Length: 152
Image 1 (cartoon, rainbow, N blue to C red):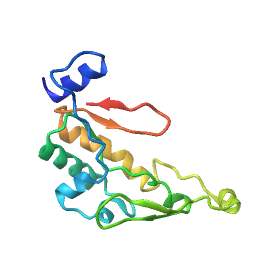
Image 2 (cartoon, helix red, strand yellow):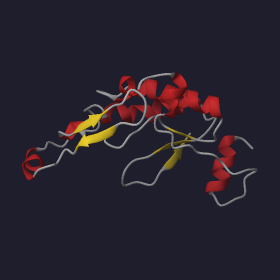
Image 3 (spheres, rainbow, N blue to C red):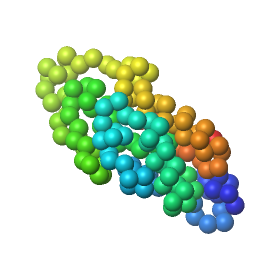
């Protein structure tokens, strides 16, 4: 079976030739491409480098499906006034919550995910990785409040 057939068979309740492997990799792709976490994740978020890193990890490891790109909880934290620590290697972490006082809640402005980075550039990442992999394996985009669905 191809990776796509394997994943779709398992998702539809069938029995694939083997258990499909799907890594929720976060920064594993950065390790494979030898990129520092801040280069991709800090600031506006480099969607193309992120997607290229995920694709490199897939080629190296050979898992059956990929996420659209490196993602981390807290991507929107800085946009809302919080702080995130970006280690040279590894997963970014929230160091100060955006709404740590009632005043900060009242003063907050809701970002536009289509216009404001890093959310705007993270939307681009799934489109780029989908076109780059040309249907060879499924990709999942994870969005809060919605079920993950494969893209081809």
